[in-house]
Image (cartoon, rainbow, N blue to C red; front, side, top):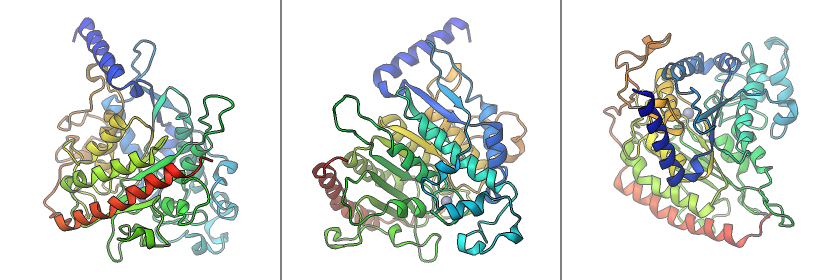
Length: 438
Ligand SMILES: [Zn+2]
């Protein structure tokens, strides 16, 4: 490609972007460092997943800087480890003392009390892991406060099962909760003496598993102040499937008369085999909830264990950009919603597929290379030759296609979800409009 032709593509695409998506012109921040990749790769459930992902992203050249009119498409930001003060914004200090101490396993008492057993064992490097993952997500969240930053990405974050004083489901640090609490402290007031305006934050979770740690943190069936956080988790729920929580069920049929129901703590449980068709069907509900709540920030947890080929083997979701696919849903949020968005990782136990998914989403969100400015990667593109190449056998392409699993989300079930959310969306509109700002 000639230099002139390349410049023409750059100009054309930037012009189209700035006219149709003024919000998108600002910078996309990508949080990564060699230290983060090294420490994140220590997590027993996801050993070396971060290494595989970032090797692939590098091989595709997705983070190459693109100087256009003095701007860059994706700006790499190095994470700062979280301080104790930042972690205690949510976590219990006794729990942190256990997590962050350098004592060996034998000398740590009552590990079960803190959830530090079974799927959340103590492992070498745990104190550094907790501080680095918490700090990476907070670094990304704080970057959104900058007026020119529209999207921030931290694929090593998204630990949605961790509690205030307990580890759970491979999650030790509640980085999603910390990000919400940190963004809430942002002052969005633009003129004085306007009363201080604090942002509303919508947390949307696409992981196969229910976001119990985040949903429970903000669950409040009785509120005395403005509802400023809304959590919505789309997940698989079935008897005995982790994690069990009454918050993971569909909203009640008669929500106005259900005292334990909180219209700002929402779930869309799906049955086995959920496919692009099912996601396309429920997605208008997600968008109507978002419109009713009108958030200032979105936190999108992009756990990819619902993709076909994951060892969890519960959903039959594909990565592709057809309507309802994983990539399509994320694209709707980042390209259509026009709200500052923090993208986090999460579950994903077929590591090459997790790397494929998050590399593809990075290309959807940001600019790629000079040749493919503002276009996502083609799903059939061959995996570039790099040290992780053998892991992508046998297809050696970026695609994660659907499998043969039958989608058990029947028409009748999908209609029942739509019916129940009709009431909920009206409740949200009413509560958001009628309550005073705080
Ligand atoms: Zn999961």
